[in-house]
Length: 192
Ligand code: GAR
Image (cartoon, rainbow, N blue to C red; front, side):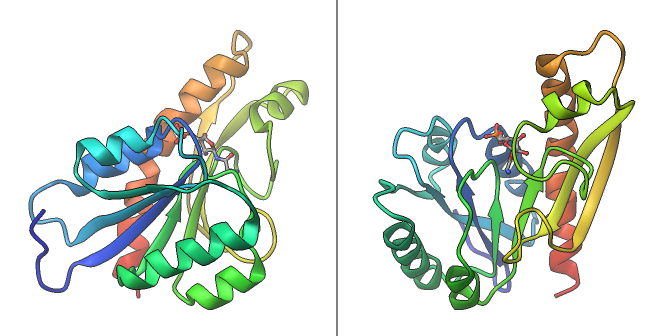
Protein backbone atom coordinates (compact mmCIF):
# COMPACT_ATOMS: atom_id res chain seq x y z
CA UNK A 1 0.00 0.00 0.00
CA UNK A 2 1.40 3.43 -0.93
CA UNK A 3 1.64 5.78 2.01
CA UNK A 4 0.94 9.39 1.10
CA UNK A 5 2.84 12.10 2.89
CA UNK A 6 0.88 13.27 5.90
CA UNK A 7 -1.54 10.36 6.02
CA UNK A 8 -2.97 9.69 9.47
CA UNK A 9 -2.26 6.18 10.64
CA UNK A 10 -4.82 4.17 12.54
CA UNK A 11 -4.60 0.81 14.27
CA UNK A 12 -7.59 -1.39 14.96
CA UNK A 13 -8.08 -3.83 17.82
CA UNK A 14 -10.58 -6.66 17.34
CA UNK A 15 -11.60 -9.80 19.23
CA UNK A 16 -13.77 -11.80 16.83
CA UNK A 17 -15.89 -11.55 13.71
CA UNK A 18 -14.53 -8.22 12.48
CA UNK A 19 -17.46 -6.87 10.46
CA UNK A 20 -16.61 -3.33 11.62
CA UNK A 21 -12.99 -3.89 10.63
CA UNK A 22 -14.13 -5.08 7.21
CA UNK A 23 -16.22 -1.96 6.67
CA UNK A 24 -13.40 0.33 7.86
CA UNK A 25 -10.92 -1.34 5.49
CA UNK A 26 -13.34 -0.85 2.61
CA UNK A 27 -13.92 2.80 3.50
CA UNK A 28 -10.29 3.83 3.98
CA UNK A 29 -9.08 1.96 0.91
CA UNK A 30 -10.73 4.64 -1.17
CA UNK A 31 -8.39 6.60 -3.39
CA UNK A 32 -7.22 9.90 -1.91
CA UNK A 33 -8.10 8.87 1.62
CA UNK A 34 -5.99 10.84 4.06
CA UNK A 35 -6.28 8.02 6.59
CA UNK A 36 -4.74 4.56 6.39
CA UNK A 37 -5.14 1.46 8.50
CA UNK A 38 -1.58 0.40 9.26
CA UNK A 39 -2.03 -2.23 11.91
CA UNK A 40 -4.64 -4.72 13.15
CA UNK A 41 -4.26 -6.53 16.46
CA UNK A 42 -6.48 -9.20 17.96
CA UNK A 43 -6.35 -10.59 21.48
CA UNK A 44 -7.38 -13.89 19.94
CA UNK A 45 -5.18 -15.52 17.27
CA UNK A 46 -8.28 -17.36 15.98
CA UNK A 47 -10.38 -14.21 15.46
CA UNK A 48 -12.20 -14.55 12.16
CA UNK A 49 -11.77 -10.83 11.49
CA UNK A 50 -8.01 -11.18 11.03
CA UNK A 51 -8.68 -12.59 7.58
CA UNK A 52 -9.89 -9.16 6.38
CA UNK A 53 -6.55 -7.60 7.33
CA UNK A 54 -4.63 -10.46 5.69
CA UNK A 55 -6.65 -10.16 2.50
CA UNK A 56 -5.87 -6.44 2.29
CA UNK A 57 -2.22 -6.96 3.20
CA UNK A 58 -2.47 -4.91 6.37
CA UNK A 59 0.03 -5.82 9.09
CA UNK A 60 -1.84 -8.02 11.54
CA UNK A 61 -1.10 -9.82 14.79
CA UNK A 62 -3.18 -12.38 16.64
CA UNK A 63 -1.69 -12.20 20.11
CA UNK A 64 -2.37 -14.92 22.61
CA UNK A 65 -4.02 -13.35 25.65
CA UNK A 66 -1.82 -14.76 28.40
CA UNK A 67 -2.43 -11.78 30.66
CA UNK A 68 -3.65 -8.20 30.30
CA UNK A 69 -0.17 -6.81 30.93
CA UNK A 70 1.61 -9.05 28.40
CA UNK A 71 -1.02 -8.31 25.72
CA UNK A 72 -0.88 -4.59 26.40
CA UNK A 73 2.94 -4.43 26.47
CA UNK A 74 3.26 -6.26 23.15
CA UNK A 75 0.53 -4.10 21.59
CA UNK A 76 2.12 -0.89 22.86
CA UNK A 77 5.42 -1.81 21.20
CA UNK A 78 3.65 -2.48 17.90
CA UNK A 79 1.63 0.77 18.10
CA UNK A 80 4.77 2.83 18.77
CA UNK A 81 6.85 1.02 16.15
CA UNK A 82 4.17 1.75 13.54
CA UNK A 83 3.82 5.37 14.61
CA UNK A 84 0.05 5.10 15.03
CA UNK A 85 -1.95 8.34 15.46
CA UNK A 86 -5.25 6.82 16.57
CA UNK A 87 -6.35 3.47 17.97
CA UNK A 88 -9.87 2.25 17.13
CA UNK A 89 -11.52 -0.56 19.06
CA UNK A 90 -13.89 -2.50 16.82
CA UNK A 91 -15.54 -5.35 18.67
CA UNK A 92 -12.59 -5.51 21.06
CA UNK A 93 -13.93 -7.22 24.17
CA UNK A 94 -11.18 -6.52 26.71
CA UNK A 95 -10.95 -3.49 28.95
CA UNK A 96 -7.76 -1.49 28.47
CA UNK A 97 -5.89 -0.55 31.62
CA UNK A 98 -5.30 3.00 32.78
CA UNK A 99 -1.59 2.34 32.32
CA UNK A 100 -2.06 1.35 28.67
CA UNK A 101 -4.19 4.42 27.90
CA UNK A 102 -1.58 6.67 29.54
CA UNK A 103 1.43 5.01 27.92
CA UNK A 104 -0.07 5.00 24.44
CA UNK A 105 -0.75 8.73 24.85
CA UNK A 106 -2.66 9.02 21.55
CA UNK A 107 -6.49 9.03 21.40
CA UNK A 108 -8.53 5.84 21.43
CA UNK A 109 -12.06 5.44 20.00
CA UNK A 110 -14.57 2.65 20.54
CA UNK A 111 -17.84 1.64 18.90
CA UNK A 112 -20.60 0.47 21.20
CA UNK A 113 -23.97 -1.09 20.26
CA UNK A 114 -26.30 1.22 22.22
CA UNK A 115 -27.16 4.85 22.64
CA UNK A 116 -24.72 5.64 25.43
CA UNK A 117 -24.93 6.40 28.32
CA UNK A 118 -27.68 3.76 28.16
CA UNK A 119 -26.52 0.13 28.38
CA UNK A 120 -22.81 0.23 29.00
CA UNK A 121 -21.13 -3.19 28.91
CA UNK A 122 -22.47 -6.32 27.23
CA UNK A 123 -25.87 -7.73 26.13
CA UNK A 124 -27.12 -4.31 25.05
CA UNK A 125 -29.79 -5.58 22.62
CA UNK A 126 -31.17 -8.06 25.12
CA UNK A 127 -31.52 -5.31 27.73
CA UNK A 128 -33.16 -2.89 25.27
CA UNK A 129 -35.77 -5.51 24.28
CA UNK A 130 -36.43 -6.56 27.89
CA UNK A 131 -37.05 -2.93 28.82
CA UNK A 132 -39.48 -2.47 25.92
CA UNK A 133 -37.37 0.36 24.52
CA UNK A 134 -38.62 1.86 21.28
CA UNK A 135 -35.25 3.13 20.15
CA UNK A 136 -31.67 1.93 20.29
CA UNK A 137 -28.59 2.58 18.20
CA UNK A 138 -24.82 2.83 18.17
CA UNK A 139 -22.25 5.21 19.62
CA UNK A 140 -18.66 6.05 18.77
CA UNK A 141 -16.90 7.51 21.79
CA UNK A 142 -13.48 8.30 23.21
CA UNK A 143 -12.01 5.65 25.46
CA UNK A 144 -11.06 6.62 28.98
CA UNK A 145 -10.46 4.61 32.15
CA UNK A 146 -14.17 4.08 32.79
CA UNK A 147 -16.10 1.50 30.76
CA UNK A 148 -18.01 3.01 27.79
CA UNK A 149 -17.91 6.45 29.40
CA UNK A 150 -15.67 8.68 27.27
CA UNK A 151 -16.82 11.70 25.30
CA UNK A 152 -19.28 10.88 22.51
CA UNK A 153 -18.09 11.52 18.95
CA UNK A 154 -21.10 10.29 16.97
CA UNK A 155 -24.37 8.44 17.56
CA UNK A 156 -27.14 7.13 15.36
CA UNK A 157 -30.52 5.78 16.42
CA UNK A 158 -32.66 3.00 15.04
CA UNK A 159 -36.26 2.01 15.85
CA UNK A 160 -37.03 -1.18 17.74
CA UNK A 161 -40.13 -2.77 16.23
CA UNK A 162 -42.51 -5.17 18.01
CA UNK A 163 -41.32 -8.00 15.75
CA UNK A 164 -37.62 -7.41 16.56
CA UNK A 165 -35.62 -9.96 18.47
CA UNK A 166 -31.99 -9.89 19.64
CA UNK A 167 -30.75 -11.20 16.30
CA UNK A 168 -32.70 -8.80 14.10
CA UNK A 169 -31.75 -5.89 16.33
CA UNK A 170 -28.08 -6.83 16.23
CA UNK A 171 -28.27 -6.85 12.44
CA UNK A 172 -29.96 -3.45 12.27
CA UNK A 173 -27.53 -1.88 14.73
CA UNK A 174 -24.48 -3.39 13.00
CA UNK A 175 -25.61 -1.77 9.77
CA UNK A 176 -25.53 1.66 11.39
CA UNK A 177 -22.25 0.86 13.16
CA UNK A 178 -20.67 0.27 9.74
CA UNK A 179 -22.06 3.59 8.62
CA UNK A 180 -21.04 5.79 11.56
CA UNK A 181 -17.62 4.41 12.53
CA UNK A 182 -15.72 5.60 9.44
CA UNK A 183 -17.55 8.94 9.56
CA UNK A 184 -16.70 9.36 13.25
CA UNK A 185 -13.01 8.61 12.59
CA UNK A 186 -12.85 11.17 9.77
CA UNK A 187 -14.64 13.74 11.93
CA UNK A 188 -12.41 13.08 14.92
CA UNK A 189 -9.13 13.14 12.99
CA UNK A 190 -10.06 16.34 11.19
CA UNK A 191 -10.06 18.07 14.58
CA UNK A 192 -6.73 16.89 15.97
C1 GAR B 1 -20.23 -4.80 17.50
O1 GAR B 1 -21.63 -4.76 17.64
C2 GAR B 1 -19.57 -3.81 18.45
O2 GAR B 1 -20.30 -2.63 18.61
C3 GAR B 1 -19.57 -4.60 19.73
O3 GAR B 1 -19.22 -5.92 19.34
C4 GAR B 1 -19.68 -6.14 18.00
C5 GAR B 1 -18.48 -6.60 17.19
O4 GAR B 1 -18.85 -6.95 15.90
N1 GAR B 1 -18.63 -4.08 20.66
C6 GAR B 1 -18.80 -4.10 21.97
O5 GAR B 1 -19.79 -4.59 22.49
C7 GAR B 1 -17.68 -3.50 22.76
N2 GAR B 1 -18.03 -3.38 24.11
P1 GAR B 1 -17.76 -7.11 14.75
O6 GAR B 1 -16.63 -7.97 15.32
O7 GAR B 1 -18.48 -7.81 13.64
O8 GAR B 1 -17.27 -5.74 14.37
